[in-house]
Every structure is written in structure tokens, then in C-alpha cells.
Image (tube, rainbow, N blue to C red):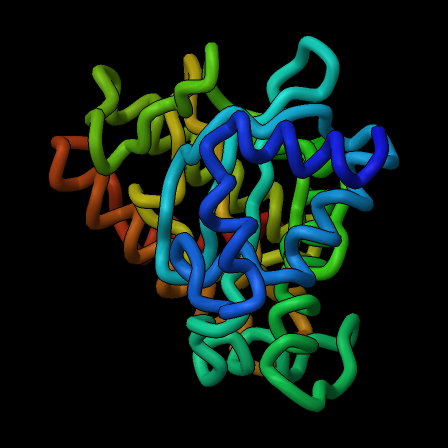
Length: 249
């Protein structure tokens, strides 16, 4: 696919106006600047995806798009450069031995994308989460969790019919991640999808256990999960849950 054909397909997907204004860096939630468009083109040339069909979600950190890779669904998460929370990101990057220093906001956002890719790579064979496909600059391509272009619902939007079973499963995943030397660091009902069982998403904040704030983030994750499921009637105890996670390591 040459560059002209690639941008023609983006136009057909409803992104024409974004492309025409790409150099302004103030486009579609500050996503489609020139560097991002060229990054998408490079990924398309490598066969990471063949088409973008539309927006799945829009957030303060990133937008997620549904795409196709041949006949298979793929998710494209594009992290926002201009509107990213520099201070928030730096808390999770600084102290992570996998990453060095950065000179500007764009470099930090590129590290953030690599961070989620590495965290998903570490977790995906053990914990239900999107399987990563590729990461380039501020773009992460990964498995799409949903059907026919529609994402699976978040627990925040659709309470599970069996709260106790889901609680036990999620806490089991927290233990498994701890064994993998990983803390999700942003776990709550907002970052768990339901696809015939809980699927964890949004791993960009995840840290290794030697991060100086790893224990603080773990305690917050466990507290969020206990509070959510206890509110649904599950037998969830914070002290017991924390002990079980720590003992699992």
C-alpha cells in the first residue's frame, strides 16, 4: 500500500478533515498530528493493520480505534501527545528500570506506549488481557476485546451477574501478576472488561515490583477491587486480599 492509498482509506473511514488539519496538532482530541499519521502509515506498511473503521473510545490519555488486520479485529490505541498529563506519567515512568530519562513530552509519551506494550507482553500468557501486536512511537496495536467492532462492556457499565466469582477471578489475576513481578497500578471497574469473564485492560501505568511506589500502587489496586465487589455483595476483605497477594509472591 502506497502513502496515497493509505490516506485515501483513512479518508473513507471519516478521518479526512483530521488529515487535512494534521499539522495544527489540535485534531480529534489531539491525536492525529503529522507524526502520528506517518506512524500509522509505517505500521500499515508492516501489515499490523489494513484498515481503521472508527473510534471505540476517547479518553484523556488516549483514543482507541477499531481496525482490521485482514479479516481479524485489531485495536489501535493512540496516546495523546499535546494533552498528556506529564506529571502523572512521570510518576510511573521514573523509577522503572526499563526506561531512562526523557527530554520532552513527546519522548515521555513514546515511553508510555512502550511501557504498556511491555506490560501486556509480560502478562498476556497468564492473565486475560489484550495480546500486544506492535508499538511504534505513540501507537499501540493490540487484540480487540469485543465483537463486530463493538468493545466488550466495562464492569463499571455492566455489573457482573456473579460478583463473587468475578471478584475471586480478578484477585487471582492480581496474584498472578504479582508472581510476574508486575503491579497493574490502575486497576478498577473502569479498566476491566467482561468477555465471558473479566479481562484486564489499560496497563500503561503498570510497574515492576522494584519500582519505589509498587506497594502503594498494589494497595490502591486491591482497595479499588475490594470496594467495588463488596458493593455488589461479594465477600471481599481488604486485609485478607492483600495478605493473599503478598503470600503469592
